[in-house]
Image (cartoon, rainbow, N blue to C red; front, side, top):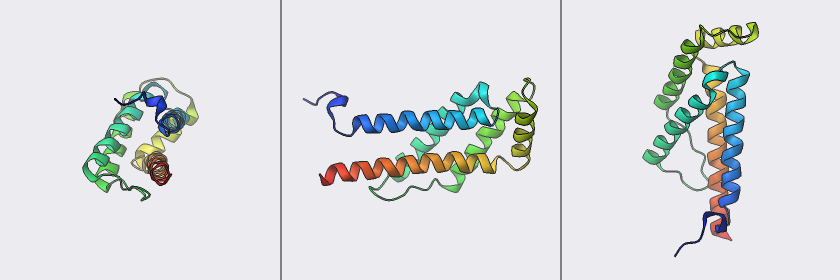
Length: 134
């Protein structure tokens, strides 16, 4: 019989890391003016990463790179949500930042978000490999 998740040694660290990632991603999205859709975007990006990980498998200690096709999908998610927010009132700085992001295909924002996820996955794989070594 397996124990509760909290009894597994790295579960709590993994949980804290996941909450930290979620918090950081939502803050970045809010900072870009995507306040109304920040959590929806987070969930969609998380699903993209989960699907990519399931397909490729994460090797312990190795950095994970999201395939280019998935990177494009994340940019499309950002574009889709930007278009939903265009009619909502927002501060001028947000409007300009989002419009500039739209013109560049949200390259800067998607690279930032993808980097956060890839770093998170790398840390998780290192924690897992350190746990197995111990």
